[in-house]
Image (cartoon, rainbow, N blue to C red):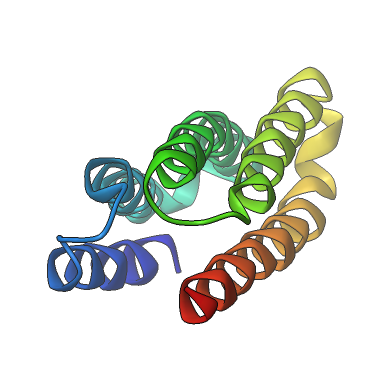
Length: 134
């Protein structure tokens, strides 16, 4: 899923390269592609490795999402706070995953990825609605 979403993100980022936050969106998509490649290259390593990779991904994605939100604040959207909140939540998820190792490997992946997808999608919907109103 990381690899597929990263490739789709790269394609969409280049398609909308005139929008604010191009470079942060590009970094975000590249991070997803990198995480997907790592997970495909080491599938036998088990859930602990998967949990570590996902924790590192969420940490990096949180920082990139916050920077992307700040870029939108300057350029386009009044709903940039949703994106910033999503980035802070990503960093919090990474902290929960990493500090809970190895016990978090059993439950963290499904629960926290679901939370990330829910809030990340909600923030993108908020930004899209703000752009549509402008």
